[in-house]
Length: 291
Image 1 (tube, helix red, strand yellow):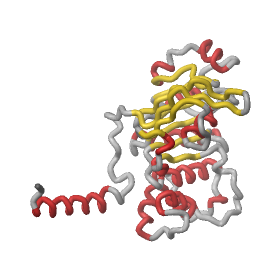
Image 2: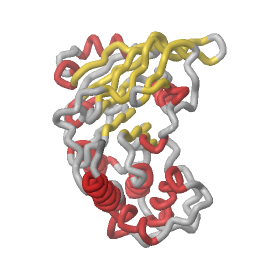
Image 3: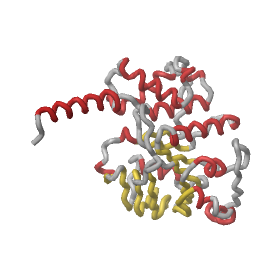
Image 4: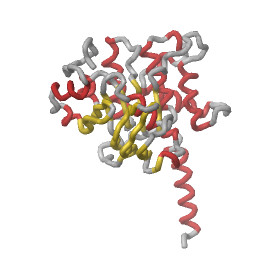
């Protein structure tokens, strides 16, 4: 039996937890150094459009705290893979597990943030400020038709600050550069405090001189805020500079492992994966010819 005094103490603790911990996103950095459990798993997944298989026998595990880079040529199934993880497409065969739950039973979709290739392909005349765009990301939790009150403002401002856009909070989003807009859409994706953020070619529309700064920001989200990241990219040089794990996809997984192991893969082997000559380039900024 629990004593009356113990009940009171338990109630006080629950109150403190709900006010101090749960209401403050990014108040405490997540400890990813000890993280080892897989938060997403794909087991023997196949997918086809009509008669043509796009993905064959995909076995992929994404550990908590990882920064996974998915590379591969155009048409290799990268975007299809992301859509399967997000539940937008259903695999023909195989199993998808999200946070230890079968995908069909999973309901906590706010735990997964997503920024698509077309995130910044919108009407630049749309009358919305950076703050308003980021705030709209809370509808996953509040519901589409619920007003977002003033008590949410610190949460929204923290997400904006996390992508270094606090000086543009009241600026109309149509007035921003492509790279700045992409940062805003990332803030919108993380404002609901997801455990994992999935990005499909996020540097499309970002000036080459700002690409490295953009990747530094993603590195900050992963290492400092503890958000697990999945990034689809053509930039193999950036893959080895930033990510912790690599998946090389061309209809099937030709490589899936740590960045250290990926660096041991020879360019000749990568060329076989891609189906054409590939030269891996290490760089501090984006440049022509990287994949």
